[in-house]
Image 1 (tube, one colour):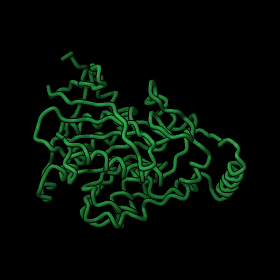
Image 2: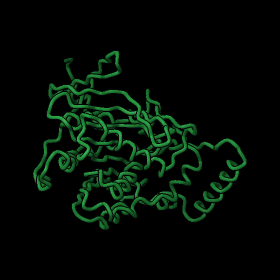
Image 3: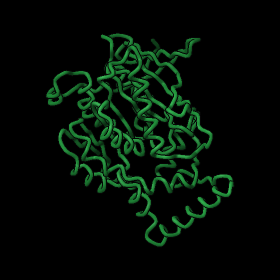
Length: 334
């Protein structure tokens, strides 16, 4: 195993999309431990959070990576595709612990609006896999390495359907215990994970980081009333144009000068990330209200990991949603 620059790696990890929330990792680990235990009350005890993951990939001919880490153990990462219901291939990494008792509990992880799996999600999968979980990390359709004919079209309800297909796929694996599958989503997919956890009891716990709760509020607040009216008109005109057979209009996902842009510019280097989506993707977001499902998640354990001043997904809206959720639930933030 090669030497590891631990401090350097921690600085890199801090640049992750939810980097400040890494320090809340102990709480995240406490929630996912539901998957590994028959007794739900084990949640009351702290679980050691595996800090400082250091990848040193060596690619085997079959496309499997071995990743060295501080704990001196080894996990396997397989690059694969699985099919959605309509046959669209979804590109994924599958992490499998190299030791322990099979079948393993599993976690399905996915990213936010337009982001791809290589943008720090692999680091979280490293940590969870080292703790004994199979992890399936995948790209949403029309983004990254996944299929989809209309690139950049981000449809939340199609992504939710694909998330269910990801659960089906990982549950079909021989090394996975299909009765112990959890969801982990961030930002836009944090909203998806709330919807799926509320409506699919195959999900045994859910961790939602800085989630979209109200797409309408996320859209209207930065635009104000007049700006929102102009946005709706623009979206309606685009719908008419596409009905006439015109090419979809593409817009930036994030714009220069914003925190989202600055993070994506760094995290997206040497990945398949593209800073563009269709205009109607924004319209779909404005009508998306995953927070309306949060009260139905119980009795599935829920953790919301939030930021104190989230100006994109709106901390006050997230906290209001948390108050509507039923036990067992936890909130953590920084």
